[in-house]
Amino acid sequence: MKLAIGCDHGGFKLAGVLRAHMKDKGIEYVDFGTHSTDSVDYPLIANQVAKAVSGGEADLGVLVCSTGIGISIAANKVKGIRAAVVTNELCAELTRSDNDSNILCMGGKVVDEETAVKIFDTFVNTRFEGGRHARRVGQITDIEAGRL
Image 1 (cartoon, rainbow, N blue to C red):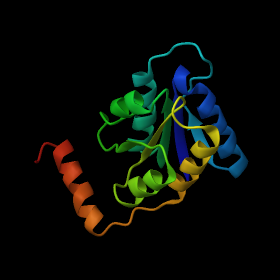
Image 2 (image 1 turned 90 degrees about the horizontal axis):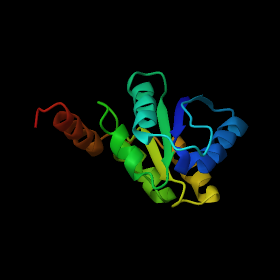
Image 3 (image 1 turned 30 degrees about the horizontal axis):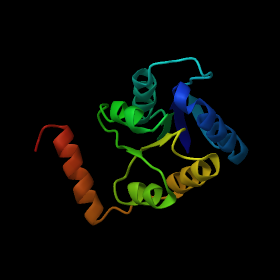
Image 4 (image 1 turned 180 degrees about the vertical axis):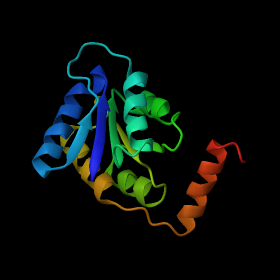
């Protein structure tokens, strides 16, 4: 599995924790920055990560800003992306198993480091269940394509 990760200045510290965790676990990843607390525009970073996931360069993505909200809104503008803001392990599990979310979004001001690592592990290790959920994800895809 290969991941794409990106953050803005508000998510810099938490993203660093997640990068170190991925390295410790031997998870391959593409890093789209940022690498400092200097102010950057999160939509541009979200776009890069989302395009890496939608284009198959990465299997899943991780985005971190101050709240996870803005960066998720930007990522969700890319066709084929289902980016979810997650604040606990249950939401991480359900967004993967039920919604087939492909980008995990968290907030550096919202989620502590220990919880973030647990959320990350849950997200990455949970598989989409399909079944009745596949019909609903298909409807989301139809909305995205303008068919509904």
